[in-house]
Length: 195
Image (cartoon, rainbow, N blue to C red; front, side, top):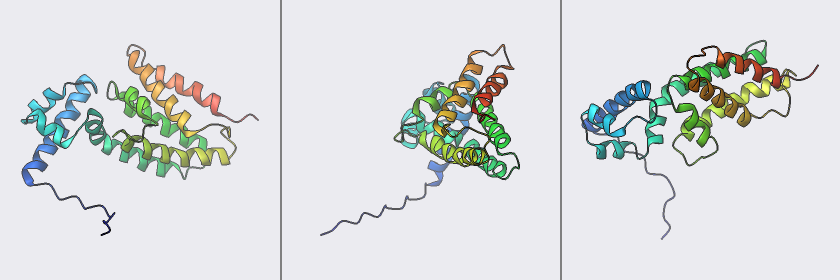
């Protein structure tokens, strides 16, 4: 007898499970903003009024929780990339979008490092953040390269790593608020096609 390979649709969450899920996300957002992405998951569960087992039933790993917390920001960054894809100056659109990623990554201590460490790991729950951002950035990069503004040997993977590295450097130097902008400017200078 042949087994079906079709995926079984996920059952909708019960109302109490949905409430727990939503409370966990809200508390994780707050904890990550206040304490960074290494915030205590036990504290997140306690503040949400659930046990740690409930947190792990919804989010089996820290990266799964981080991915869920950041999906709204990822959606915003993807929407922004679509808007910028139509700009007259494709390189400026790419740079603006990279700056938006740096700003987002800088909102949560530890996020840039986590994204860097999982950027090529499609098994990580953070691939739900990395993959769509890489795809959105590829469109902007291709336009800038096609217009001759960006060197043809620049890859989106390198750009995403550079962007996260800039966010991480800025995170490590909170007394220098202009650092991210200066590093992005240096990066852009290296991206530009000669002539």
